[in-house]
Image 1 (tube, rainbow, N blue to C red):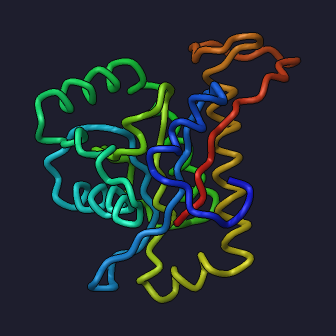
Image 2 (image 1 turned 180 degrees about the vertical axis):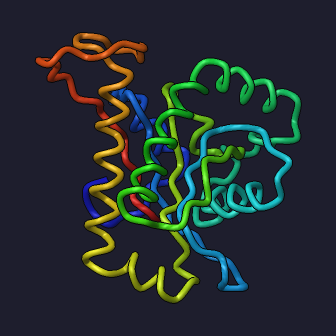
Length: 205
């Protein structure tokens, strides 16, 4: 999006797929009732039994409650065997590339900005289920944690976090895309490599 308008969940992966993007990046801020959790974490699509990971996915998937046509999401059930198979197939196709991207993002947050590192995790996110490329979902921090919320809402925090994410994507690109290649490859790019990774970035809600 280019203006502050709500884009329905089902349309977000469509935008990325239509753009033939190399990497899908969905950016969010987290929150929790106890107001004690803080730090950044980055997710890839996956199956998990971890309660906290599932809770994050549940909250992010709940954005469909803001939409009129909820019927389009009825077939996405992480407990359904057909959905599980689709998730597993996607993991096989994009897992390594999807895993390397959040590792770069987390290193940028923790090494560069000294943010609390909550790690790289997996969870069943609808928005990542619909993409035809590697994809990650970033939780930049907890707005419910007073000092972190203030930082994320500040001009400095916004600039720091956005630049860190951008630099991490550039690092990921250099490691995975050779000149003229549209697919991730494990090669060292040439010095005149000017191909840009085209991330489909989805701003936080």
